[in-house]
Picture 1 (cartoon, rainbow, N blue to C red):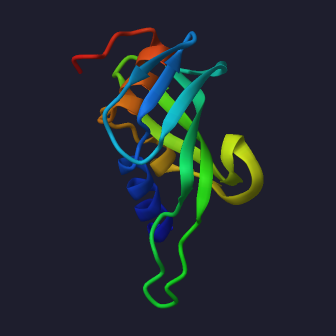
Picture 2: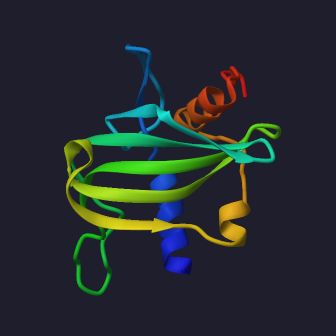
Picture 3: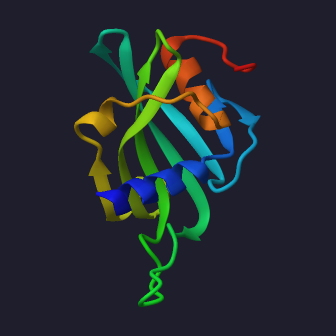
Length: 148
């Protein structure tokens, strides 16, 4: 599990660069993804002020989550990712609780890796750090966190 958590944290650091809101594109800071979009139709109310939303990340080329030091093989090479964020709207915090990596753009092709957090890790929430995370909290909770 520790290996998965480390990979997820690395994955979060490589967060997306462009967000789509109602047809308008907004440039965002950060590296990694060439674009991401929030799927408003997936917003779910989880109770206790918590909500969730799926986002789609796109990459211009194949990326991976690193290289296996023993074999030299790329770890989970992929072209697109669907990420489920769970958000505590009262606190303005979130957590990536599930993800699915795809071999092709647009969530197509083979599923390279999928997983979800359970137990205490799934309940943990943190302050949004990237433009992607601030956009998720803002969209799901209907807040403007630009200065967060």
